[in-house]
Image (cartoon, rainbow over all chains, first blue to last red; front, side, top):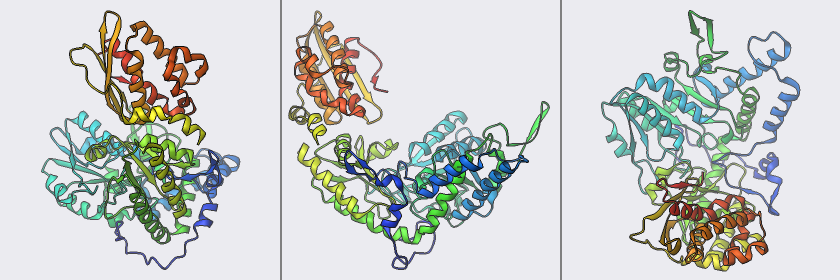
Length: 420
Length: 150
């Protein structure tokens, strides 16, 4: 594939990939479901966790647990150091320029709501336009609708093509002098489409429009370089990249973050407090009110280490082949219609079947131990575009195998037998 | 596989492929919409009353095999029943698909509908089976708001 991240192309033959060794790192993959080996193909919903992440969280609560910052005792000092070290790790992971640009949040959803409420309220006013794409997850749409309702702005959607790609010409034409913000996903959770973010950012910036990127589905699959992408904000979740739930990251350019008011008030985010007035801490602390998810941050750090150890170069080459095989094999099952046929795709294969509704497909597959998602995937505008109420979504991660694709295809053939 | 066979019985598959009473009833004030926001299923149920007897029942909708077959068999089951009897059927059906009564216990009352007993082994599919019944209940009460399973 070309370089959606803006990084140079990897040499696909350079790095060996031992998927059995990787699978052995994920304890949950050993289990059976309904008497069959688990085939976990719901990674776009949440990814499984490697032993190192599970152990780190366990170790934290057994040996290190303390609240961070301002503690003078040994445990607090140790927890603080472990917490702060992850911020630098995240900065390097997405190639941000400054640790202060990394804000720990609950997940992608909270990151986007933070931008909408803290940045958006200042940047968007009555009669202004917020531009989104038709392929956004509801979490990169509803926060903007809420903001639009609060300030009297409108949300406009740039359309997608019938291949499930962003219509770049239509996007270019959608900018007006009232456009104050563009919110777009890096990778579609419903279709797997990889958007050319660097190119889109150049367009948006030419109109003076800041860009918020939903990176939730990108981080487990491709190296993200926010400096090369040039975006103003980038949001992602830990749990989709083999880390814990309850922790996510908002990257924001320092000069924008510095000008933004707090999102939530509370402990930790202040410089000084009195009844006459309160002054706020500098970034990133200003945006981290309350006791953060300390164990989860540490777990996220281990997930980053894990991904770096596997290397994106190796996993991209492997996943590209795996997902290509899945597209081909699933698409060859009689009565299957693929939903979304983008040129650049990672992780996700969405489809419907003539014989059965996605929920019936999901139930039949579950009996074979195969976990897929059936539904609208929090992307109802995408479903509307393709004229379907729901799809079956098989989503892949670095530990899935071609044999699992074959098991899935066997399950789909059984759907045809049962319902045909 | 055993569970799947119980869930997707031949009669259920048949009603999914060729739903009965899959039409609108014009001129009846008794109709309601039902919606399952989790899966996007939607259904409209029409009921025609002759006094307190259901003289006709029909539906149109999109959904999985379980929800379509359930709606189809429901329209057949309630036709000719008194409103109070249809509501009793609804209650018994709910108990059946949630596993609170056995098919043997409810066979006399539910008749063919005991085919849906297999649903109780699939808790996430209970709403698929019961959406049409909730919607019929709303139609009988002339509910203005669409019914939702959430």
